[in-house]
Image (cartoon, rainbow, N blue to C red; front, side):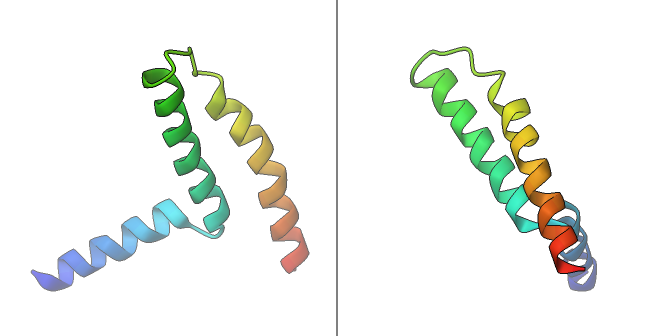
Length: 68
């Protein structure tokens, strides 16, 4: 049973983090920011995630090209 849990944890880590942990951290920060804007400041914050992804994608591509 422990092997299955360990295998699932490794899969989840690879699926969420993948090759670039900056994107995963950025999405997590964006979700937290969206929550705070929507629930604390009562602002319609649906636009934050698409803007964040549009900014993170070029950074991720630049980092991948720079590595190779």
